View 1 (cartoon, rainbow, N blue to C red):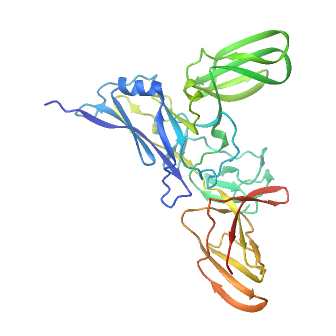
View 2: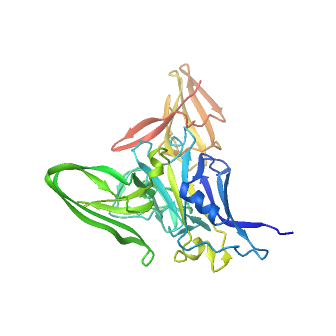
Length: 391
């Protein structure tokens, strides 16, 4: 009797620091039409269970692949968001920009904390202006900006401007690309006499977008503010595009015309990527686990007591602090990450109905991500969580 065996080809796990178990079940992961055909043609299986996409390859009795996939194999999966509160508890901009999506790939060399992250590494740049919510890596540790700064290296010592997160890597705006249909109308900021169009694909020789695939100049009869941009010669995927000096990373796949998505995962059977990210080592399955990891949003916590009460708030762990002066509106002195597992918060009441008291109320409620407002402190604007207390 002939047996049919399958072994893991690769897995993609979605994690989120907001959840108590870190497992992110906020997405449906779906293969593109071309990938569905490639899965069938390469005797593969692909199925999502919970927060993980599992893919398997048919193998022989000795666990070697029944058929070796081509080195040109490209597998594309779309991430469809199914949570209405995702942006409230996730450290990503919540303002919708048409066509923006997040792009993840095993061509990103971003190993950290024994995980193969497929988002881009967020390195600190001392020439950049950082604002609250931005993240950067310092000495292998990820920090989040909590007060605007420039040329202040993230470290434990610089805790006025930076809050320590951990040694993992997280999705950031560096992972964004602009989706474009293969044929579109491109609009300039001002009238132009011509359009110089260049596009570059990923080059395996230098692991960069340096392979020129389009280079053309289009002259207009009269200065124009729009022209027809034809990229139909390009296969679906990520490219670097420059038009009249304006450069950006784009993603082309006309399937997304009908169903916009949050993000795209592209996995390549590419022997030039680092060993941890390779699908195969010759005819041996590496079975890598790739990780997409989201950071929880940090907000200013604003406790509002009855106007006849005053008190102070204390939080465990003590890295998060509130003013020592009693008040009926108690505002955290820096952003505190939202978390499904509540922190230990207590209220020390000092005044109730204009009478002096000394009462400690334990287990005060933590914020819910269902409602956010804003809070401004100097030049910085923060997301704010308001908690009304019946004290």
